[in-house]
Length: 201
Image 1 (cartoon, rainbow, N blue to C red):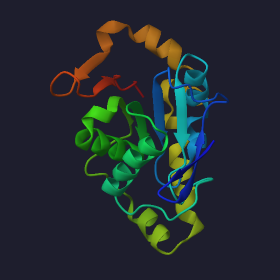
Image 2: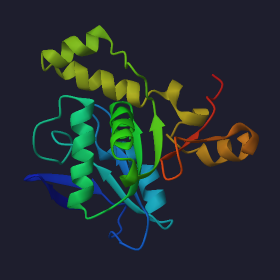
Image 3: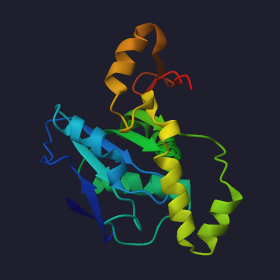
């Protein structure tokens, strides 16, 4: 689907379903140089299990128009504007890497609009390899290749499966409740975060 955010055409993958205002919503936010497609399996699953799903392409990425944002706080501000454009009061947010930091900032500054957060690959500060920064500054395609390679690296896939997320259900079942930790940030009504243990190498 397409939505206008501050005069900019934004693409959001919905998992093949229309947005139903009666259902809870999940917004998936990709990392640098990625797009909505990194959430293909997750977004499709939730869209077919009672959730509105919006895997967005942030400006300057994928199918969205505009220039890429230059800071985490700019992306977080944009996420609030995206909720307004979608006429959603509140949503759960899932973010990866730069998207995770943006989701965290969004939740910290707009807690009433965020029901839950899930963060994949967050780090503050987030170290970035010099070779990647140099390639990005030079507008060298190597930057895209490095990020894509690291994003889909077989050695870092949850559960060690050849297909990202394929073994997630089995991993969660095996881990059991003793290994899952639910952290309630701040007071009631603040975002909730589910933390999974790191899988052994």
